[in-house]
Length: 173
Image (cartoon, rainbow, N blue to C red; front, side, top):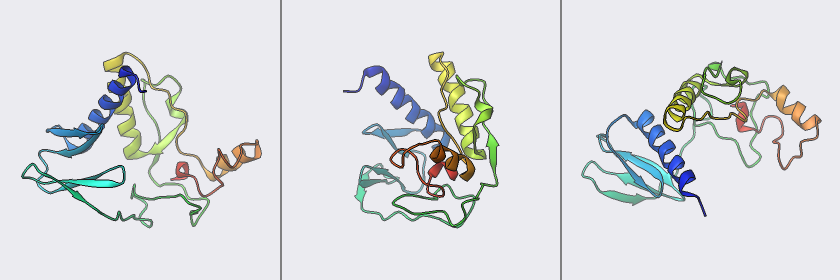
């Protein structure tokens, strides 16, 4: 059972993220997931479990089966995907826009952690909003990991069940 406080935080987090991504217009929450911006002129499709709802400008939601597509080649794509044994082509890959997280609203030293520029900016904003609303700081437990760092985790004894092999961790993207 999820506590009301956690559920409220979850909904507020989704609300904040939806406002940042979709704009400050209206929004609709279905099963704790933001489905669409009411200002969106074109249908917006976001996953809800294994099905999708497409928001139509008329205000209707139409269930649709959509096969997602992923962009594995472009460096600026946030749709890169690793999993099920899929490996990076280059274990030494480092995103071109990797930056330290710059936030005074985290419980630990945020500058020790790096993210891609867009994600780092959004995280810093989210940490500020969290501090402003809850008077508490967010804790960063992990972010970007280089192949060298991933290898060191394995050498220190992190099991394959807990640590991905080098080149197969989403942290490396």
